[in-house]
Each structure stands twice: as C-alpha cells, then as structure tokens.
Length: 256
Image 1 (cartoon, helix red, strand yellow):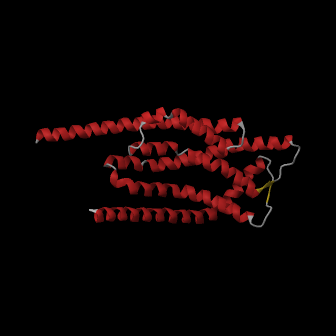
Image 2 (cartoon, helix red, strand yellow; image 1 turned 120 degrees about the horizontal axis):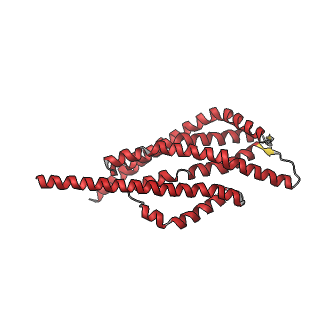
Image 3 (cartoon, one colour; image 1 turned 120 degrees about the vertical axis):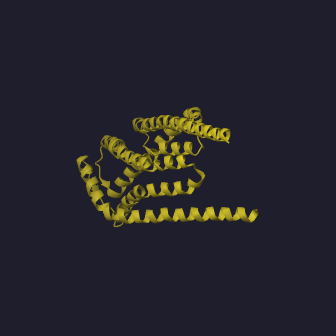
C-alpha cells in the first residue's frame, strides 16, 4: 500500500515537472519573440513619450540591453500565460468532472483578455496620470525633467504589470469556485478584508498620492464585486448540475 502511494505521488510529481518545463520552454520562446519586437514597441512608446513632452536619455552602456530585456519579459508573460494556465488545467483535469473540465478550459482565453485589459488600463489611464502628477511635482521644485530611458520604462512597468496581474482576479475566483475551494458566501463575508487588502495593494504599486491610490483601488474593488457575481452564478450552476446528476442516479436505481 505504501509503495503504491509512493508511486502515485512520484507520477504526480513527474507530471508536474513536465508541465513546469513546458511552461518554462514557452517563456523562453516568448523572450526570444519579445526581443525581436522590443525595438518596435519601444519606438511606439517613445512617440507617446514625445507627445507627453518627456525627453529621454541613456546614461550608461548597459541601459539599452536592460530596456530590451524588460520589454521581452513583458511580451513573454503575455505569451506564456495561456500555456501556463493550460498546463495547470491539464494537471488538475483528472480530478474534475467532464462539465468542470469544459467550463474551466474556457477560462484561459478569458484570462488573456483580462490581462490585456489590465495592461491597457494601467498604461492608458493610471500611468499618464502618475506621469503628469510627477511632472507637476518637478515643476513645483523648479527643476527640469530629464528622464533616463531605463528609469522611465521601469517606472512604467512597476505600475502597469501589477495592475495587469490584479485584473486576473475574476478568473482566479472562478477557477477556485469551480474546484470547490471558494464559495460566494465566503467571498461576501470577507468583503471588508478584501477591500482593505486592495487599498493596501493600490498604495504599494502607486506613489503616495491619494488620487492615484483611489484610481487603482476602485477598479480592483469593482473587479472583486464582479468576481462575487460570477462566483455566485457558477456556484448556482454547479448546484443545479449536481441536483440533476443525483436525480438521474435515483431514476436509474428506481428503474433497476
């Protein structure tokens, strides 16, 4: 019995290792693709910087490579996310019913869409506001803005990337509801703690400015409430499916 259990765990660990390797291989391929397109992305974003009257400079020989790697990393994240979620789905697939397998598989494109929406929101709404806020502070100090390209893009990524990942909240909650780890009632009871956590997260990824904190915290709270609605819908659907399955079993037993 012990040998069988050990063999069972060994098989699971071997499968997990294989799926992690697939994900890492996808990440490396994404890095290569990202490096190929990094120059075009930088050129596009530099046009926005010029529109915002931002003058950028390079202060060390290694900054250019650092900038390319930053963009390659972000492109690779977008490229890798669907594969990582698919490998995760394949790993838990044997423990799911056929309906749950089909339902959770549909979350993968939804997660990619939310990630792209998070990037668009972070770059199109939050980042320009924070950039303008910092520019006003610089003007108040009577200083002239001269940005290093690496510092400019690092600041942008520090804002945009965390927001993009936080936009994945509905998918995470839906998935955990489907595999019966979370329930809508628990999410409602923990609403106050969740709000506090989101306000803290917003404060961590934005400068110490009340307006910028609110701009990030409000969408996160809206996403949480939307996640509760989705979780309630999925949970009711699961209960209905279980009731139908139980009714079929009873009918079979009665027929026999």
